Length: 222
Image (tube, rainbow, N blue to C red; front, side, top):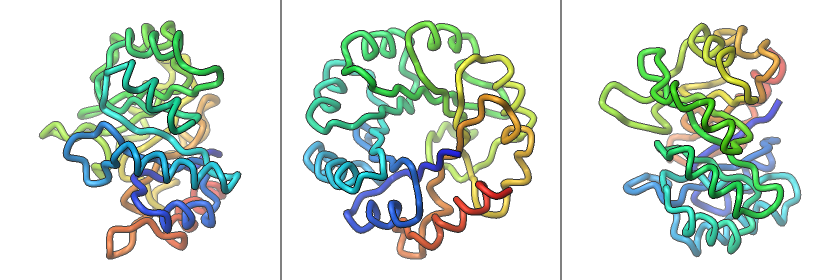
């Protein structure tokens, strides 16, 4: 099962996530006002550190729809995975697939509010445009996206998974104690893994190996 921890901003956090046995580390760029937003230079440094370690795949997490800027960033940083966390249209996915480097993994986030997928009518278009994976996450009542610490329901996740055709990751308030709450999602044939932020952070707000390891162990052995 894939485990991703999101929002690293320091070299120490990248190393801690590798030590915790993570597969992916999320690096924010193009998330205006985001608490983990990185400059292009900082993104490049942390992506290079993750790649050099040989275990972690750095993932560019962005709200941007500027395909040319995104392609330039992917080329400069050599990130193998791009997570479109905003409301980018299928045309953005199509352009990234057409013009991006071979092997670039494109993850499109699907946002659920009150168990209803905001992008429901576009899921088929995203698949045809070339997305590799969906990531199911919460959008709050006040419109906040990403790192909300608000969980989805298992029934909503599995129902949406049944209506779509791509492998999927699960996000939204996941922690070491709620793996059993998502038995249906975990048993789904297209379930890939989880994307975690808040539960892997210590009191200082930084990602820590012991907390991340506890989450990964709980979900991998549930």
